[in-house]
Structure formats: C-alpha cells, structure tokens
Image (cartoon, rainbow, N blue to C red):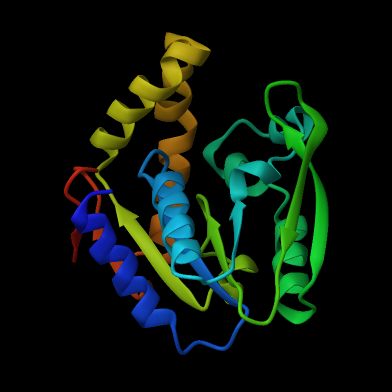
Length: 212
C-alpha cells in the first residue's frame, strides 16, 4: 500500500476516533471517482488496526431495471436509481440496534435479488458507506464524517471508458454523457457535497491523492 494512502487512512482514523460508535463514515464523489477503492482500502486499514468495520456499497442497493428506467432523464436517475429508503433503514438500524443484519440485494447483471450480504455491527464498529448521491436527504443525516473524492468529469469519463466499456460496450459510455454526468452535476449544484464534507481529496491521480 502506498504511503500517501496510509496517511489519508490514518488521518481519517484520528479524525473519527472520538465519534460516538457505531459511527458512519461516508465516502462520496461522482461516478468513477475512486469511492470503492478508497472505502475498501480504509476498511482493510481499520481492521488491521483492530477496529471492527462494516462496509456498505450504495451500488448494492440499485432498484430493479423496471424501476430504474421509469424516467430515463438525469432527474429520473437521481430519483429512481437506488432504493434510498432501504439504504436509510439499514444504516439507521445498524446505528440504533447493533447486531447482525442480513440483506438480500439486487444482482445488477441478472436483475434478480440473489446477492446476500451480512452486516455485523457492535458498539465499537465504524460503518463505512460509499456511493454516489450519498450526501442528500434522507441519507445525508446518517454520516458522522463525510469524505468527498474530487475528480474532473473528463477524468471520470476517461475512467468509465476504461472500466465499463470492456464489459458493457462502447454505447454504454453515452449513458454517462446523457444521464449520469448531468445527474451528478444536478446533485453537486443542489446538495453541495464537497463544501459540506470534513475531508476533501483531489483524486484525479489515484496514485497521488491530495488532501485539499
């Protein structure tokens, strides 16, 4: 693991050490900003430090295709892409009543609820939640510490081409241009997630993230 990532994880650990537990660390940014990589790295780092964690990916809570495609506009993506009430309920339950929770989640490729995940939380756990559109009502109120990964949309589109085109084809990139990026711009304008985060990281170069 590169030293700069370790410094960032150490910084987050110090900043959140005195928060009442279970505490929720949110990791947000636009599509392809590096949220999953950052969250997984932080999760592994804290576990090595003896701190119990639970990692929640917002992408696991997509609505079925029939719901997601009700409105194909950017506004429709914000409104229909994710099962926000279910995410909210799970996180709130884990904070209020620590224990073991099992969730049957959607497999995006098959559009079926076959992805079972178990979340275990006790009184010392740090809950890491990562995903797009995270710092908006009602989910916003659940994050005790907010991290925002800042990248340009040009860089996000470059990563999307590298990550998603091999799997979904060249045409999928147009979804970013027509729907996902405009939705992110609406979210940034309305909810100001970067301005309201305790930690903002320039992640345009994933090898050299910069705390800003």
